[in-house]
Image 1 (cartoon, helix red, strand yellow):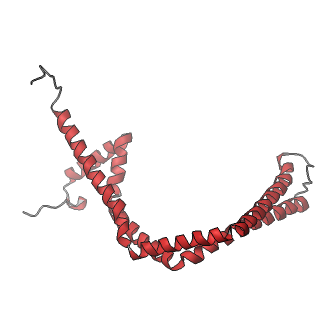
Image 2: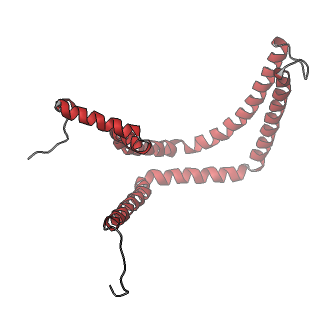
Image 3: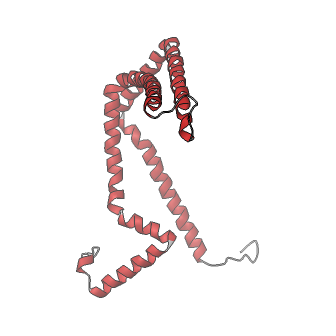
Length: 201
């Protein structure tokens, strides 16, 4: 015989009512409602590993082609972010003073301290940008070596894509082992209370 999961629309009305009552009962409980969420999202959850595998391969390919450029780009972007953050805070402070009638430490209300905080934010951002620039200049050779290591690692992963299955395999083995232990614990617990009469029995 061909067994398959029945479709809700093809069920008789009594079965539909029973299924609806079962779902409502499970939804009313804090713990079983999580199981219902997993059941209703079963198709999305089953497709998630495929999407994860696809995006992992896409990321490895992208890193293989652009690792060197991305490493230097991240260094430049961080420097620009610090400088730009300082200018943003400085011009925001200037705008508040000109249009918000807020002087440096003058005025009433909680907004009177904003220009001062924005000024300090700009100063801190610019100081950090200067320190970061000096660190990059002093450690330039070390950074070139580190970026070369990153590029080599990206090439290695691109050439040996099967290495990503190692953690997945260990996870599945751990999952099966946990399931076997749980099965054993349930079987032992189903025997009821176990009493030892002597050391030999």
